[in-house]
Length: 360
Image (cartoon, rainbow, N blue to C red; front, side, top):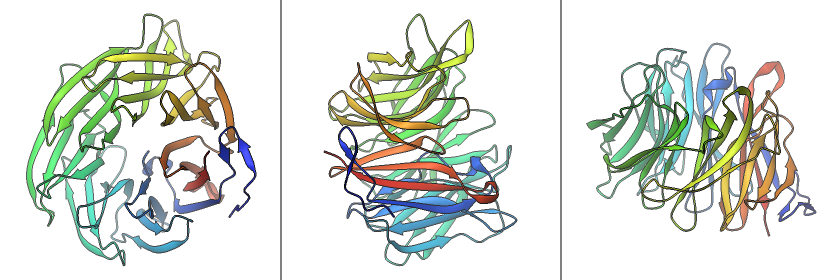
């Protein structure tokens, strides 16, 4: 644990804690949103634990200083994919992911945990066994749970409505005219589901309120660049959204550049930025520091190694070295920046590394 208070880069101090969680055999079994900040400032880290045969979901609750309060590891004999967790209206912890996970099979996984002890209240599985995974979720005003189920094999996304005891109430298939590769989702502050991905040369964004589609849009970056991957979406202080990932010039698809695109609440593009000063880059994660100023987790070579940067839409400023992988998730609360990355451990096992910095 690093307790140094010396400044690391513009606007940020050295991490006041840095910890690794889990021991995952298959890199792809850890999702892009492993970290959740609870209402009381505690953290939930959703990772994996390899038992020599299977990857299990490992859920760790820590305090704001990274000290472990409890852990729960799901032990039934499947490979699990860990994705996301959230706090419901009663303070229970809802854990999402996939079970029986392989390159072509799996169903969505959901578990409800006691927030004080971490004990399992119930677990359920849903979906079509088409490499389904529960990517994101929330609890609505009627105390029902909504899950975003993405099928890796065939592309459609299903929104599941689940009761408090885990019983299935309904499902809604997100049907679009274009084929979409979904990569991330966001639950907004007012509990809307935002789905993002790429479709051909366009960025896709769709917004849902309790299963009803508000809009969907297919947006070109510009006439020069085509989207390669959409990696992340964050909500901005003015209620709009910033989508990030990588793009390329059509005659050289192997040369990628990180991009940011701001979209309003109706799915219209406000602005875009392409980081063409850094070749072979990809923005893995993005969070707003203040209006039109962002921290971004940027991978800068084909192997995914990267660093943390500050970006004000014109100047890209180096902040912090990331030695193994770029940050897949960035969160800010109460002048603390939380960073989650997926890092190698001995024997090629993978872990979730969480770092916390005070920002100024």
